[in-house]
Amino acid sequence: MLTVAEIAAITRAVDCETEVFIFGGLCVMAEGRCSLSTYVTGQSPNMNGVCSPASHVAYLEKDGALASRLGDFTINRFARNEAAAYPTLCKGRFKTELGSGYLFEDPVSLDAAEVLAGLRDAGVTALKIEGRQRGRAYIEGVVRGFREQLAALDAGKALPTSRLAAMTEGQSSTVGAYRKTWR
Image (cartoon, rainbow, N blue to C red; front, side, top):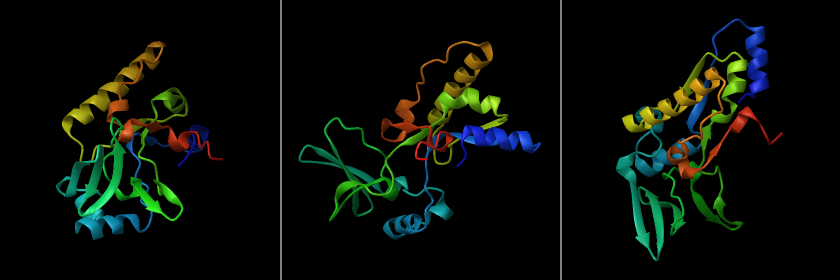
């Protein structure tokens, strides 16, 4: 959870290769959430590599809305034409006495394309994308998108518009900790 400037400081101080995560779902890995998924599905995310196994996911239309379900639990409801994220417990919309909303985390993915130049200048030597439990088309599309971005940077050209938005959770992205706007 470092900013680009913090990564640069480390790579200047320590002679080592640096790998950073640049694209994919943000798993909060907070205590209890994975236990909730195990309770709901009967499968441990730590043993099976995914917190919401596809075999336990269902989408149902009811009263003009789309409900995403994990096992027997409704995780989210989406209005007509609203982007529907994959149902994970930590990114569900829940009702409490305080109201309805995303209690743990919004359905959003990391997309660090806009900070690639800074990461390169910081001395980053390897870029990591989320690939576990992803199909070949997803991997190919993300790798192609970042190769195009890197080729433009190397050629001194303007960065092409990212085509990766459709591959993000809820069709929404963030640069996350690279900017730490919450400070």
